[in-house]
Length: 276
Image (cartoon, rainbow, N blue to C red; front, side, top):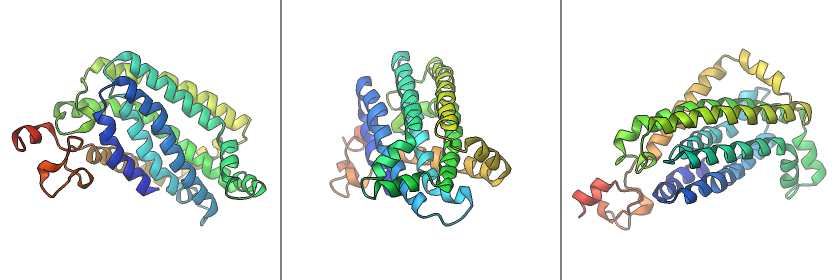
């Protein structure tokens, strides 16, 4: 799980930030990004379900939460790399619709996929085990919190680092316009709330997930708040800062000479003033 997440941030993000077309960026955000992290999430849940080692909900969910810290932070920042209102709106609407659909079809989707490498009856029993439903509900509660906080932190993150565009991939070539970021926040809050309402209604009334019961438990678990803040800052924002820094990376360098590294990793000023 960690390898796949770090590979995405270390190897694939520089490619995304090198894209010049907004259409290509939109396709990446609404196709490759959710599919890639859905695969990681599926693998994480499978191991979490199979290896229940404690009655503590947070400890059982940790394997999956690590991935979500990266997924939500990166996803929101990718949306704010667009320089026009149309593509920001499209990215938010499509992403919200995808999230709602994936949440509403989660149990059936896991049954089908898990049934590919285990008996279908066993897969159904595993997915619908009350303990696993609690874990899924806890993960979903935390994910909703991360998604909502990301609506505000991602634009602020982009605006803050916009003055150092030559040092960070995510702001290189992006025009830091406060109006665009404000639009992203307003539209994001509306569609996020709408998607959460639809998905939560379906989860509670149709899938019978113990979402409310689990949330009440999480509110009494005081360390949960500290963990959520810690994860958002370290595995979320700080990891994003490091992974998006324009520094030479081993995979992009043909020789130990720093000037042999390609433009995906080297900052423009290094190419222009040192390697030219």
